[in-house]
Length: 122
Image: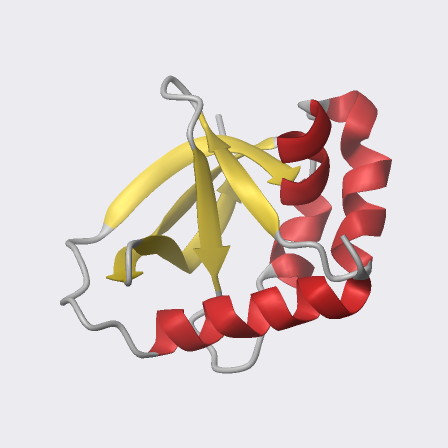
């Protein structure tokens, strides 16, 4: 994925997250591994062995996501702040399990978890 394509995609996600058409769901707590979305979707890359690459992808603008424990679903994440990617907050946790607290928002069939907090999973 080219940098400008990833950046445009992130801006679209950020806009969708800041203007949901549906009321936000009740607060949730979700546990899983922080992954870089491109390498995971293309090649299934995850875990400690992929940590450095995931951090480089985050620096390049590739969205970091959460691979949910149990379901194996990829959860797309957004910052509460306008025009800000959550990558800086998530990058130190790449390849590790975390618990994210926040609210889901949805627009046009796309669903995002808007982050309130990120903590290492126990």
